[in-house]
Length: 263
Image (cartoon, rainbow, N blue to C red; front, side, top):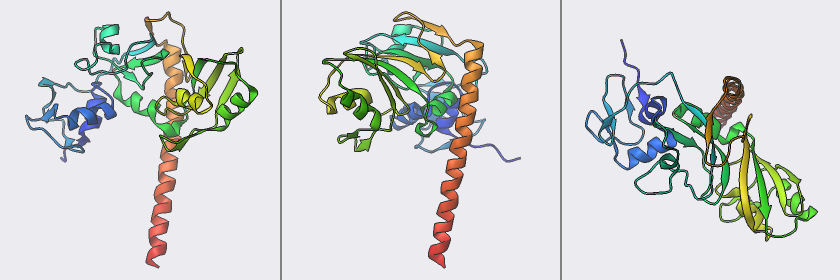
């Protein structure tokens, strides 16, 4: 019987150790071994291989995953590398199991961030093509004009990232405050957008991710409710279908293009 092969980053993700992106960083840093040997990125493993991170064995996929909604305070960094950053999210929470954040909130921002030990759900939520809503409450340093709202909602070209932001929903709350709903996760996206329009963000709080709203005090967390988790999985299932259809369409176009070149 042929042994099942799994990419090492996927293996670590399914074991609930970290996300695939973080796994790639660990592998690249030489902190992961397979049967005592440091592997290359893209290496595949079998169920019989001994996989270790920093000399500690990684167990098989867990069934009782942890899903937390955490209200991150300003000043806390969303990293799992506790050796480098003293104000990291892991040491702050001090959860009894190894968990990691889904996505990021920069150091000066606060609000909702998911914490989990389910690596698979991380990849589904972060996949840009899935268009998952994230809502923010933002305060800026001067009065908000209607032109500002229109420009923010319509998309802004960020030269240093060489990307144009997707159209989004922006609503003015008062003279200096607005809400914005994004489906992107570009680095410091809202701050960069505001800077382009000569505004400076003075406070930024994420208040919602998909179907889950921020409802705990700053610095505290709670577990997802059963209904929240059920709805979240339903939304992610729909996203996966869309992602697979898009991928299949791209592959079909690629094959047709190759065939046309051969003719």
